[in-house]
Length: 153
Image (tube, rainbow, N blue to C red; front, side, top):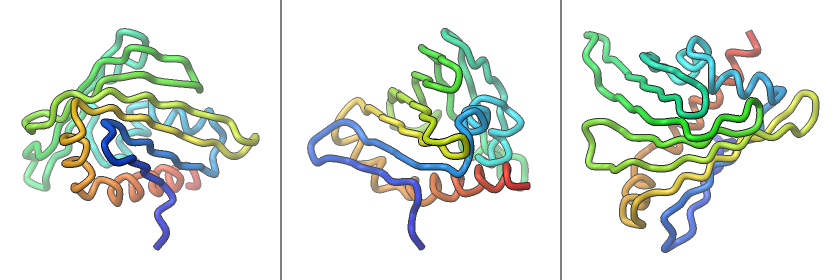
């Protein structure tokens, strides 16, 4: 199965680029990333805080069937331009990974299609390479596929 969400990582660099074209207008793609109810549907995680504005913050957590938190992340939003971009920090709690910096850019391609580009910068090449060994590429593809399905319904 082809992975529609592409991840590009150059050797020796502290960054990755994630790109995906969606069969969604840019305004719906942006809403999927900024409205808690929609975000929860496609990410499969519970939003506990979502202050989508410059100097805002967010936090979400994933629970197992017994109700225990198995993953949580938080960050600060440094720049928020509706339907264009979000610059934020991202920290996975209770892991050895330090805070990363994410630049999300939302681009209108046509009235019915859009593109998301995420540049993520890690503290070191080693941390970036450790992240690439995790199955996050497959997980992100599954989540982005669900994102499109949420709006098809």
